Amino acid sequence: GQQLNQSPQSMFIQEGEDVSMNCTSSSIFNTWLWYKQDPGEGPVLLIALYKAGELTSNGRLTAQFGITRKDSFLNISASIPSDVGIYFCAGQLPDKIIFGKGTRLHILP
Amino acid sequence: SAVISQKPSRDICQRGTSLTIQCQVDSQVTMMFWYRQQPGQSLTLIATANQGSEATYESGFVIDKFPISRPNLTFSTLTVSNMSPEDSSIYLCSVVLGIRYEQYFGPGTRLTVT
Image (cartoon, each protein chain N blue to C red):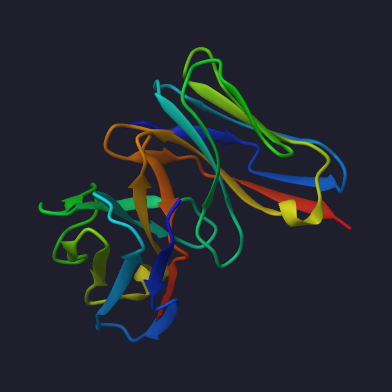
């Protein structure tokens, strides 16, 4: 079945640093989604990408849909403490979405 | 987006018992999903629950273990039957909204089976 390879698994950064994470797949998706999950909460949709090559921003977050439609990246600029959490990529199929394993972001004091 | 609520938010249950989790949405939606998220893991789709049809279960999940109801366009329940400690997880409901089928999640139900 379809699988998403998300990397890195975890990141330890200083406040103020930029962050980059990505997802790749052997399958083509028509839509890529990026979610953030805080402890004890459900995932929250951050950015949705609908077209190959699309670059979309949401505040300090920027995500791109790869031109091959098999990959996507998410960048966070000037990280702040509330960015801590788990970020999931997801590829959308007609009847369901497939999730990556997540990138856990830690910010060092 | 939509406001999605789940009840209970958490529960501790004994082995062999069953728990029914409720999911309520503040707007009518056709597509609803139930996911399981084990500690430190990603989300695994249990089943798709579309109103007016039988739930569709993913490989590894069966109706006898996880019966689902979808009585109307704003509500669904998932029952975890004959629980064992391996069922300890967060259970999340999710809905699809809009013409671009964006998927949104409820806050989850944290289940611990002792």
